[in-house]
Length: 360
Image 1: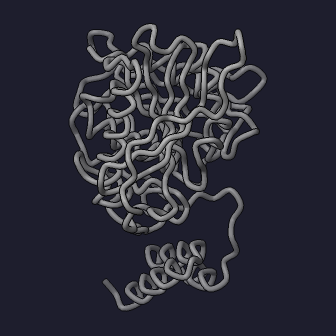
Image 2: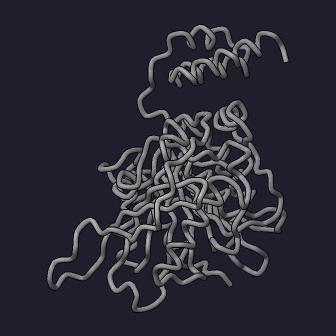
Image 3: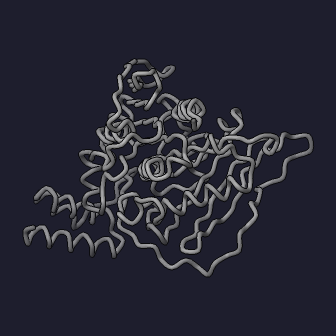
């Protein structure tokens, strides 16, 4: 480790503390590359529109514990209207707490229904993510609950899930433990089918979804990772930025839960190679054969879909590479942030994949 590297990393830490995240990123890139141009840019880099950067953060002490709260509907159903709702709540595990939104479909309670845990990306919140993905509309058609946890700005200044920190990557620790416990609480309060509980996310949320699928395979029957990274791809901020720039393999080599991956091949924020690494992490050492098809979304972008099957024909993973798409939810709505309406419908395809993979 050279003195120059240490100096640049110290500068990056100072810039993060001062809130200049773009300049901090440039300083770290200069340290990793030895790039003098990047070093000069660190002093005056402007904010870049549409760029999502995960940053170091620490969990601040939460406010004093709140009693368990009943889910609060935003509005009651009108007379004669089929009763679905989008409700707000708060969950605490005694160490950390997070707000959330929960979509409750019509006829909930009549029979056990599936649940999808949806993890937003950096700078997003549950309402923005629900609008952009249109997951509530799809869940209404299929009869699914959808749980949207909200990352705290105290835990991460850009509201990124802390997928890149070693203390938030394991079963029973940090945010994975919190999110699993929140999911179980919702399951206990509502009529959820325990064989059909799934997790999906975008960017930092996609990376955390990969971690949850690996850490809690008895809870989540399948995972969806959009523009994310494999579990264990990084342990700190420098390794996270390196993984986002060039890709990083999964730490686990054992087969994981069935996983569907979406990634744009023009993603300049999280390198598309990370999609391959997520699939490899899901399939693990299991022998698999890939079926490849190339198509185009109606009037929109072309895509290549890889379906990975075990020798007995069981689908282990799907990998959708969306050609020309950047760091955005494929087929999403312009009403939300980080969406690409021209791509194939990731929401519909993820729900299809999930419902075809109940726990055996």
